[in-house]
Length: 143
Picture 1 (cartoon, rainbow, N blue to C red):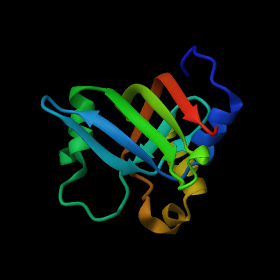
Picture 2 (tube, rainbow, N blue to C red; picture 1 turned 120 degrees about the vertical axis):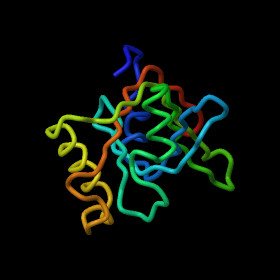
Picture 3 (cartoon, one colour; picture 1 turned 90 degrees about the vertical axis):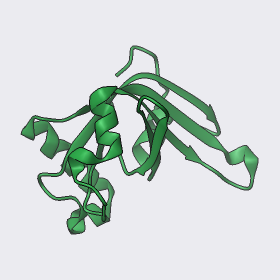
């Protein structure tokens, strides 16, 4: 992880939160998608699951963007009508498509542990996994 000191409460939010928004860049604009993710204390993993998609994995905008420019942002947040409860964690870092089967399977296991839908077949053994290596983590609010 980044050399920055990240409080345990922020790490807990990254571990427990259920959804994030992954931002990648092409030459013209940002591309932002919701993402299920798992944090292992060092890296963040998200995968291309079996939800319906109009393109092959290689043609997905986020995958093409990461291959061309690995700089990404991952926003994890919680909104509440009671604004004193608001918080966010913003991770800026480098994304990579995992090639090694050992790390890929470990990431898939982490994701299946966190999401029952993935345990029920929405995340196949050979799913494409994206690793986000944090460079900087910022946070605000009721952490």
